Image (cartoon, rainbow, N blue to C red; front, side, top):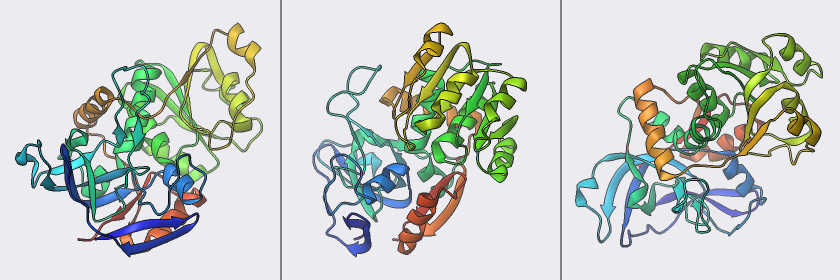
Length: 331
């Protein structure tokens, strides 16, 4: 089968690899579409824990079940599915266990014509979604859902700030917060991305490259009950500044590095800092139910054929997309 394989750091190729059989409790899925995440970029650049070469990255995918292994119901064969990339979460809803993994490393991922996964990772593809939209949903949708619904517990009428709008998780966080009845605002360095966010239900946004953006936000609309961030870095302190007394700040990434924490502001204003990553099987099922009930459609920013994987990775590395970058996998 054909697969997008990383041979070493920054060495990507579309190659022929031997197909894998389904072991006990596993299935083989013929992938129709797969989406990229920043995790794949970190793996490609050799900056991710647990690296191995060669590897087939990719955590997001949608396709049809081709074969099932021992102990798996054969009724799955031929069904259209999406894949939960959160493997072996464990028994504790509060946090993942020691055996937790994410599809795409160390287990080979979805950037291939076929992928082998445990049958428990399967879910019916939401009927209202295209293959590309379905492939865009899993990792980013699950991460955003847990951040918005489980960790921050956003309530109707609350004022929410989603930073760095444009990336897949941020866009999903906007969509889930709007569906929850919140008043949502965003930040970006791009006026065009802020405009797109408004089309999706945001009230407005702020250019985070402007040193005075936090002051402007506090003037109008005012402080935020919830701030959702994935960047960290030097700008993290401003997020503390715009968080309302008693507010929550939930974060799930550090693309700009670790942040200095203004501890006095945090404790004096009774703020709650909430770390999160991925989600449990219960979060996955609840996320799918919310997507179906609210008719949420993942925003697909770009679609490339499998042979143009280099271009897809380059777009993500540039940060030029709004929404998810999807690869169409040819049979």
